[in-house]
Length: 167
Length: 194
Image (tube, rainbow over all chains, first blue to last red; front, side, top):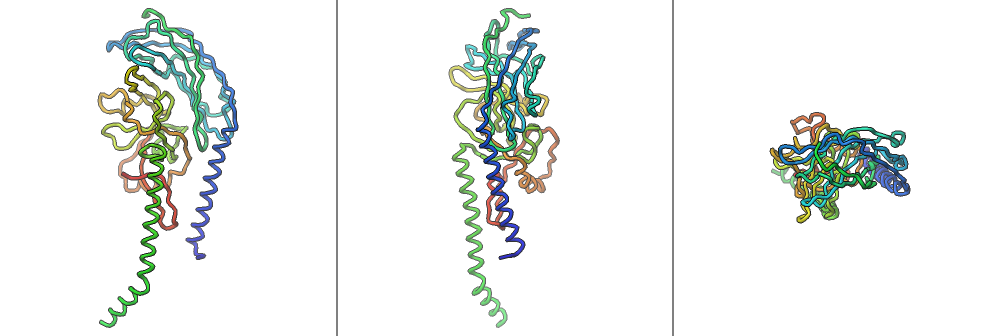
């Protein structure tokens, strides 16, 4: 009853249970945080707008992405994954979401940023529906905790429009 | 002859009850672990509710040895979600993030493209030959929560007999192993080998 095996077993079981409880509490503490993020995106330039040989249209944009996500960080936050998606509707597809840029914010100090970039991932449509298309740019973020539940949210910015003609 | 008879008598009388008790206890542990596992499958709606991260293609978010909790709901798949999917012809599922979604007006069916956070390019290299998109039926669940480091126990247990070597930045692969710790009367409900 008092052998090493039994004692080690009791100790490890208690340790794991306490650890699990602490992780759960840490995750719950994230709910106390009420974040106030802000973001703004400018499309500085439409670099080119072409139709590929397979019939799909592609556009290249230069963007200014600025955001302040510092209020998302709690003591239980490991990183915030942020990405910008162009969202639009076409006759064939009720929703198209194309990620244009993403980044990882490792700490609170990096959470307020201004990025000047061309789109990291290619903006290609399924078909040729992009001429004159109105689209939203939505900044999504996924908060990845040190332990526990991940949560995500977004800011939708409307009012962007692609040119009517190829260039 | 007398000696054999004596030995048999002693074995039968003293030890059989203990042996039976141990066998029944063992059976109870295995069964309760299985019950917990199946209940988790029902609650989360996913075939494998808990998985272990095997590669570094989602770093720094998920490192090798972390555990992911999965959940599958009927909600539509949207960009940014971390999904677990099976590619035809590959036995081990992959956990990456959705970067492109195209959803049909009429049927609601969806074309999805994924990419590992730490990979340079998207997952088209990993899909089956000629496959450009994933569909809903490829996807087994979404990652909704995680625990760091806990999966190392399972990795150590499963990788000794496995000969193939995982190269850095291979797609995130998940081993499914159920580890039942019979000595110490606990069931780690992690992963089940299929």
